[in-house]
Length: 308
Image 1 (spheres, rainbow, N blue to C red):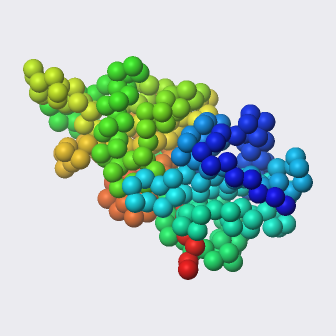
Image 2 (image 1 turned 135 degrees about the vertical axis):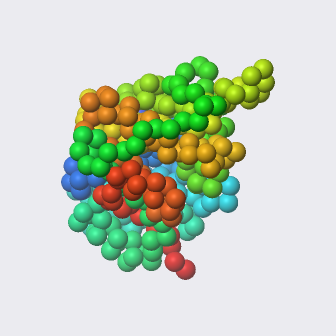
Image 3 (image 1 turned 90 degrees about the horizontal axis):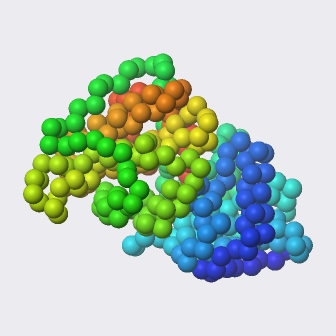
């Protein structure tokens, strides 16, 4: 068993392909993807803020993979890992964990029986859960109806326009999620990575903009709130409340609820049948808003930290 670290260096094409193959094999075995979207995208990119950890059982057999992402501001680094199903219970996962920085917090996206196994493994290695990410969902065709979106008159609604809105959105997203270790750290490069994905659809990226500042070029058409919806795969029947944000200086005007409803209306108009979202368990206000719109808990993803 050998471990190889690539600190800020991209994987070779054959390596990235094998990592994604292992992730697909693990998903087929466990019923849930082991790598979240940002980590999966970074497998194929040259992100300098990422460390790739490769575990070889016998050269060139890649048995497992871990990735460490630098934290934003004072946040600790975050990590995710996956072990090829055929190499489990042979010390690969333990070796990967041992190669991570001690302060790194490790995500588990496992569900069902795999979640229990992941939790038992983490605790046996001295890790304890420190953060929970709820997966909530609701039907778009049945269940309690949601209300009509109410947008104050000073605002208008339009779709994201590539070539016009990138920098403005990155700025308002960073402000809206200043205390969020992942979402608030997104850069224009991260945005453009997502815009290059097969599921990208600017029509589903809904902006609430302020047009009240007539003649004020610094404020006219400023993004006040947004709802980025997602349908992945594009031909599927399930949509996602990908990210909802409100500019901090526009809080308290009901824009978060309004733009969330606008996104639900859009997804239903596309003919989709179901919608999901991810939200931090500690974001009580957001959880309450989503519950009020008919969302219920479906899964829980956990982040673990090494307990000294």
